[in-house]
Amino acid sequence: MPGLYLHIPFCKQACHYCDFHFSTSLGLKSQFVDALLKEMTLRRAYLPDPSAPLETIYFGGGTPSLLTGDELRRIFAAIEATFSVSAQAEITLEANPDDLTPAKLAELAASPINRLSIGLQSFHEPHLRLMNRAHSAAESGQAVRQAQAAGFENISVDLIYGVPAASHAIWEADLAQLFALNVPHVSAYALTIEPDTAFGRRLKKGTFVAPPEEFVATQFEMLLSQLRANGYEQYEISNFCRPGRESRHNANYWRGVPYLGLGPSAHSFDGRSRQYAVANNPQYVAAVLERGEVPATIEQLSPLDQANEYLLTSLRTSRGCDLAHLRDVLGLNLLADRAAYLASLVAQGMATLDADVLRLTDAGKLLADHITLELFADAPAAAV
Ligand code: SF4
Image (cartoon, rainbow, N blue to C red):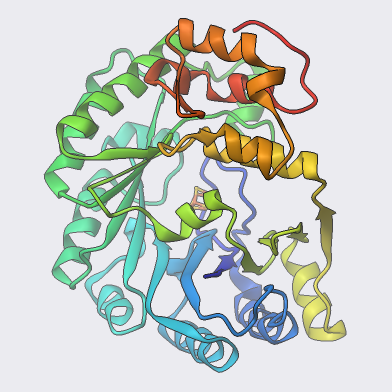
């Protein structure tokens, strides 16, 4: 069953690593909500089966916890008037700790939202300041505990590793604080330095030094071993959960289930093509409200694109890449065409190949992007 994604493109301040689409100017927020509701009506027929009940709804951003109670109520009323929603739908809202006051949490608990994804990133004050997060270290843990007290059990937290530090002690302490919170889902990402961010500009000027690859790799290994020891499964390279507690919304992305994305910069997928809405709040609002259209780039997916997308997403998951499916359904025969490369991955301990399913090992996960590129349909043969 399909999913609905709503991009809320506002943040209180710009985190120094972030290249998502957002604005720190909140002046357009009310008009944005008007535009979002209108876009919902304009694009209600986008999904292949518009009457199929939505299985997941995901408020991402940006910072969806900046929506007021009234704005959320308007959005949910419009969703219910426009779509059919499964009674068991997973409805997630991304939230920042500084927004999760007891009053805000009571408001969220009274809404249809049944899952919170809280962007903690760190429990270490100097790291939060380095990354220009809007919350304090004390608020990181407090937000989760208050959310649990408000009745939210289905909570995911985001953490970032590979932040410059003299040793691994801070990451070790972050992990210990994470386990004390006892949440069912964790997303953990290596700090990446994107060019169009404050860190990227400082890196270019020589005023920021990224940690060496080995430092980041060690923290990834610490993450894997400690999460496993605490009962979490790694179901995707950056995502971990207690048994049965995957993010259904994200798992559906990786399985190629269609979804409708609303809001500026939101992506949509109808099974054959992808669509990317304009990443500009004033342009989005004006186009939707004044002209009744959503400026977007549409990419038709060729069979080659579909095969490469399947490779890209499946190799990141614990289910692995079904090479027979890739051959029989998507027309890419890696078992025959790349037999030597596959054998070299297995021989070097980077992957396993069982019943035609290729899965990366922990060592292979560190090189997932590289291995995927090597296996892409138009990539030349190469050794690991
Ligand atoms: S709050 Fe989230 S979306 Fe906003 S700048 Fe920070 S990381 Fe990016």
